[in-house]
Amino acid sequence: MAQGQPTKIKKKKKSVLKRAAQSNQRAEVNRNNRTRVRTMMKRLRTAITAGDATAAANLLQPTVSAIDQAITKGVLHENTANRYKSRLTLAYNQVKAKAAK
Image (cartoon, rainbow, N blue to C red):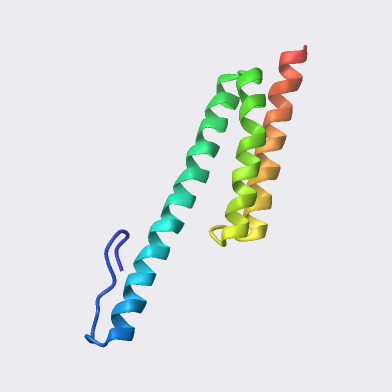
C-alpha cells in the first residue's frame, strides 16, 4: 500500500470499520514520530558537517532522547536506534575534538 493511503475496507461491518479507523490513527501517530526523529537527526548531521560544535552539542541530547522515545513507541527497532545514536555520537566527538584543537 502506498504511503499515506488509507486502508481499503472490504466489508462494511462495524468492527472492520473501527479497525480501519484505528489503523489509520496509528499510522498517523507513527508517521509523526518517525518524521520528528528524522528531522532532529538531519539537523544534528547538518551541524556536524558544518563543524559547528556548539550547535551539535545543543542538538545531541534532544536527538538521542527522541530516538529513545521512538524505541518506546515502537517506531524504531532498538538495534537500529542504538546504531543511529552510536554513529551520531562518534561524529559529534570528532567535531568536538577538532574544535578543541
